[in-house]
Length: 101
Image 1 (cartoon, helix red, strand yellow):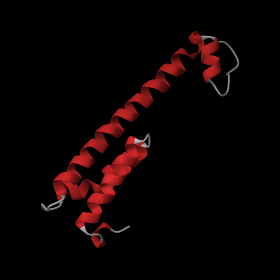
Image 2 (spheres, one colour):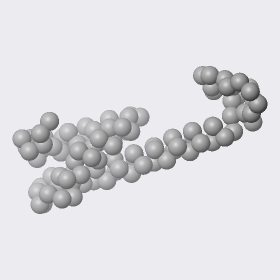
Image 3 (spheres, helix red, strand yellow):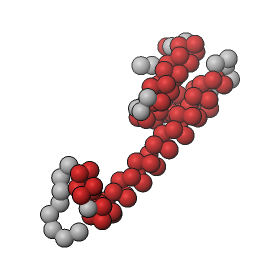
């Protein structure tokens, strides 16, 4: 979609929808929202809806970073500690690796 052909009111509504979609456990939408509307929020000359778009883009970026950090932390901890967790670690695994831990 070409954002130049969309009115500022429609841009604000679309940005809001992507932000709300990210709240419902779809953090990829926050990343898309940040990338797609960054120019509208921070680079383009001021317009009426810019302040709200900037707010949605900022919170989308923060949310995406928090989710990404949490996911990286979980994967790291799980990979390093799975063997120590015994049966619980095995039940959390789809594929149980063979060999020594």
